[in-house]
Image 1 (cartoon, protein in one colour):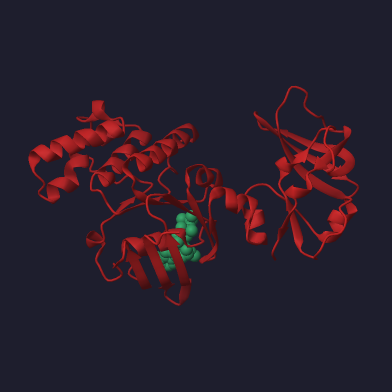
Image 2 (cartoon, protein in one colour):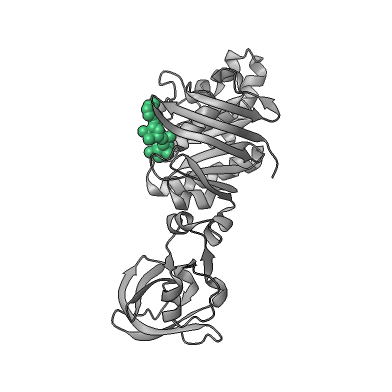
Length: 335
Ligand SMILES: Nc1ncnc2c1ncn2[C@@H]1O[C@H](COP(=O)(O)OP(=O)(O)OP(=O)(O)O)[C@@H](O)[C@H]1O
């Protein structure tokens, strides 16, 4: 992995509390890295330390080879976007986006051209003369993003940028952000506690819990190959079984005493599979999620969570049937 942003031995203390201790991390260029973790895990603290907003941080931060640890916020060449937009209410959309270029005394003609291009990219050309109060939440956030991107920062930090928006707009805007990133080749760090948002937008996910990095990898890697039990249970729905439980289900010759992860969608409620782990039992719970259905399937005393596409002939509660698990889908997990 290229080392576009490199954090070495980051430590952050608030009073006597050490919130981040000896955190080391590298982040690739021209990609979206997502910091994902439970509330209070330290995501924002790490982000603020990178931006220079955190006075309590010690350690070294290298951006594109340059040590920026001692530089003030405005000299780091980093853009920051918050959940709350932070637009200037008394300025038009055009003036909000032009603000940074004007402060840098860029030529008027160039400003007009660059703002127009940027407003076109975020699909707000028709709102250039509107004021923030006349815009929807999603539009305001697009102005905030345009205002940051126009400065061509080396790194763009987005702290829960979609949290204030309703579900449909969140999904639309996260797809837009992905599009902007690809079009402009900006390196982004995006903080969220929403797993599906993280999985959908990230090239690279850094899972942080209790001030520590639990795992870094592509969305697929962290889902399919969690590095430990925390990861196996934090990301996505899961079945986590002991060796004894798996043996009770009919699995033989397990090498070690470790735990084993089986994702709900890897269990098939059908009877046309072969050479798989086969368990007979009963459907004890059905939750319809629209396009998918979650089942709880009971094999003697063991409950398996299953997730399947909602097809024409759904299985019903109380049905006795057989499930199959491909042995390749049973993943051994470190403690
Ligand atoms: N200014 C501060 N003073 C004291 N403690 C702080 C301060 N900022 C953060 N903390 C503490 O640091 C820890 C990490 O907080 P942080 O905001 O980084 O977490 P987070 O993962 O971003 O959480 P959330 O998703 O809820 O925003 C928490 O225990 C928090 O209480």
